[in-house]
Image 1 (cartoon, rainbow, N blue to C red):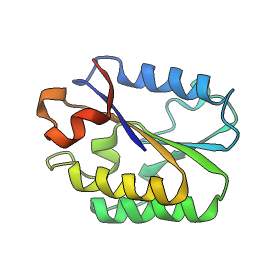
Image 2: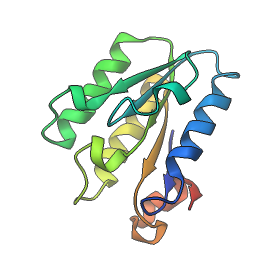
Image 3: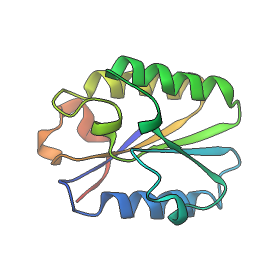
Image 4: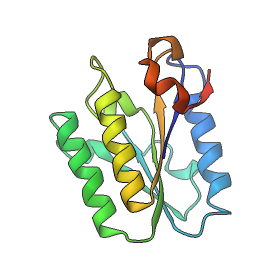
Length: 139
């Protein structure tokens, strides 16, 4: 399952995402991974959440990003949730449609039992129609 937290830059998406992951860590039985563009939020995350700073890896496009996510999934059979902060930046989709990547994540989630929660810097009105049902918070 893919869930989207949408809103323009500076609207509070990261705060909502951090609150959500820190509350979820108390109830999930599997592992949680949090992907971000830096380690800035390291001390705001529960220590049971694995933070990955994707700036350490040289993605050139969204296909490589999806391959990276597949690698994480393949190495952790207990993975239950993945949180993506600054999704457009970390997935190299800043000036592109996110629909194909979200659909690929949806397929991966169904196959491997992983929930993806994405923070996306755009208005809900800018999303493709088929993605609007995935929005859980619009700021």
